[in-house]
Length: 334
Length: 251
Image (cartoon, rainbow over all chains, first blue to last red; front, side, top):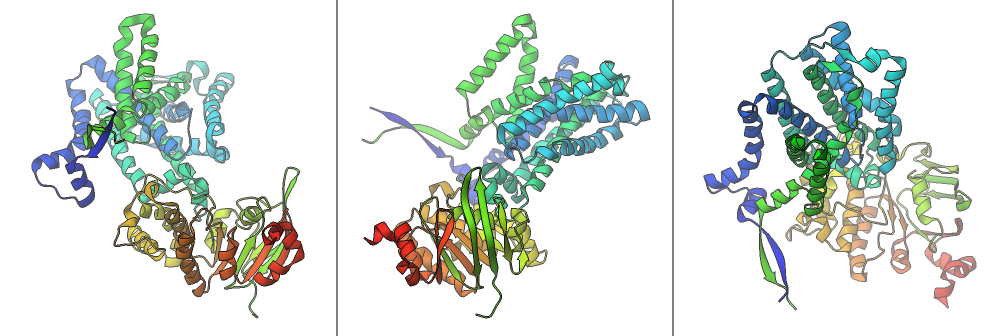
């Protein structure tokens, strides 16, 4: 007897998404839980973790933001291999402002985010017309070129970088600042991508000719998406500059380009929540594997492959499906 | 007709590498006219549309709309002047409900121009427009995901997207292709309605019978050249056309 899996939306899913009739507290909770969980998690985690894992949490949040930034670009049809560009430009912006002009980190971080976003948009503006792998290659090359420029011209401290940055006032401000930004970015940009504006951005990815034929200038919209993603990435760089109290050539490292992509793919591309979830799994996993010494990267790689093979849709999509639908086996009709 | 032509195409040519896809095509289009463009596969019909809407840059020649040269403008600016086109291959957002597919044209800057800055709820406008092209409101067809709709509805969706832009000139690229007779018969009244509103239409078609019934004028293309231009009956009688295109069918 052949059987197939049948998936049916849970009653509560149908009621809450179509006619919005909630019957009980339990149903309220069903709707609220997926939103409350990350909020509560992000607010409570810094309190219960030890000093070491608090540092890990910082980099988790930063990679989650980079993955969100990558995902916004990907949803607009621009697959970037160079989140390190955004990260590095933001890091140098705030580093320079702090080192040469002595500005307070609470000023340099937001200013560097906006400035970094603008610089990245301007750098990539000439290649906005490129599609697919051609655009990706350019994003991969630009950070590598910038590193060599810094090395060759010895600007901004050259190979030594700039050290002695002002740290943020306290580690609690560090933790809660990045958590607040992460939650705002996650929910804010998710809302944006679900709005009519987001639909236009996704339309560019899906069928750009159809968007042009609506009289919309897709390059203007792509530039906006680039600015948003660039600003998020630059915030990360600027923030980490003040956490490490150092900015140098490693800010353009490949890690900042590749790990966010891995996080978005493992977590589930196309949903910013998936990208965040991916970072919350991959970064701590990489830390936990430190005990294995040289084999760490091998195990990490194996885990990545397993995730991608077993759950190609991404962890978030899998959880979402289980949450909203139930499955049962039914006989296949002849 | 004494009015000035709404669209003037003069000496339009396009070379793709060594291939001359379009050779010196010229014609005028009067306001309110329904022009049919026919020709065998590869004769340059879609290239003509792409050149008028500037999705493809012409090698030489000019296009003027309402007396102004438009062949140097980028495609999105041309749409904003009031030329809307449909695509031969419909490619909607398959995972979204049909009415959500209307959001992108309704988001167009042209809507802001027309409405003077303020306009209503896009979802409600989308549902109204879709009802106009035959998405039965009572049957909630507009709420179905585009992926679940038959081809006939997808073509109507494509048409609704161009109607949403309220253009003065519609360019419909093979709207009838892949549709059953009944489906075509249900779309023809929508086109007649657009025409009654005084809009100008260019239709690229392979379905000659249906086209000849509604078109005022026919242009026949072959190997990138315009080989005939005139009333449907006259074009049918033309010897060059017969040998180039209709010949095999007329036998």
